[in-house]
Length: 414
Image 1: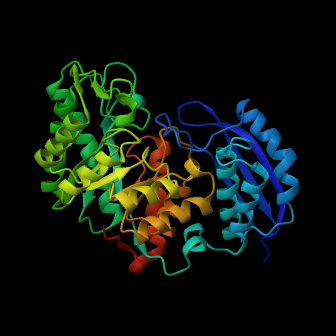
Image 2: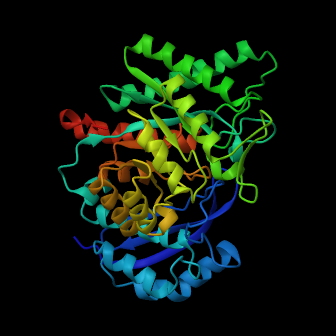
C-alpha cells in the first residue's frame, strides 16, 4: 500500500447558501480523498482570508500553478509536512495569497487520502485505534441574526445539548425532537408563523429574544421528561454582529434596547441563571477578553465559549488562557487553514482545561469530515446543526462511526 500523491484536482462547487466554493481531490497510489470548503456568514476579523483577490477562480489557478507541482510525489500520510508546505508557499500569516479555504480543502483531502490508502477510517487515521468517544451534539434549533432574513431575533442561535444521553443515536434523536417541539410551540404562540427557517435549518420566527428562549427552554423540558435525559438550552449570541464599536453598545434592534458592557454582562447572567443554560457562545464583542473573563468567573456549570474571540487561533487562545477568559472554544479548521493548525489549537485548549467544540459553518457542503475530526481530536461536543441535508450528513456519519466502534463506543465526558 502506498500513499504517495499521484494527482491533485480542484473544482468549483456550491455550498448550502448557493455560494461558490472550492473542492479538492487528492489521488494517491492506493487512495483517494475529497474535501470542499465551507463558509461562515458571521466571521471573526482575525480569521484567515478565505480566498485571494478574484475569489475561487483565482484560488484554483494559483493552486494549479503553485501547489500541484509541489504536492505530486509527496506522501499523504506526512500531514504536518504538507500543511507546512502550504504555509511556506503562501508566505503570509493569514493565507491571503493562496486562500485559507484552498489550504483547508487540500489539508482535509490529504488526510482522507492517507486514510483510504491504508484502508483505515479518517478518525482512526487521525487518532489511532484507541479513539472510542462520541461527542454530544450541540444543535441549532431557533435563531436569526446573520443566519436569517427579515425581522428575527438579535441573538443568532438558540441551541440544545442532550446531556446524559447514553448514546449518540439517542442524543441526535433528542435534538430532532426538541426542534419539532419548538415548531409546534411556535405555531401555537404565533398563529401567523409560516414555518420559516434560517441558513442552518433552525426556526426563524418574528419573536423577541427572551420570548424565544422561553420557548426553547420549554421544548427542552418537555423532551427531557419524555426521554428521561437532560436536554438543556444554549445560546450563540454572536454579539460582535450587533455591537456598535463607536458607541461601545450592544444594539438589540428586536427589543429596542442598547446595553453597555456591564449591562450586557448582567443580561447574560440573567439568561444563564433563569434558563439554566449549559453553553453560551460569543456573549461579548470579539476583542472583549475582560468581559469574557468576568462572566466565566461568575458562572458555574455553564460553558462560556469563544468563536469570534478565538477564531481557532492559538495566539488568541493563549491570551485568553492567561486572563481566564472563557472555558471553551469553537474549532473551525478553515478559520486557521490547515488540519495541523486546528490540531495545535485543540491541543493547547485541552492542556488548559478548555472544552473544544468541533463546529460546522453556516454555509456548509455535504462533507462529513468534521464528524471524524470531532472523534479524532477527542472533542466532547460537536456543533453541526439539526436539520437540512448538509447538517444531517454530519449526524448520520457519527451514527456510522458509533456503529463502527460497536461495544467500545461511549459518550464523551464534558
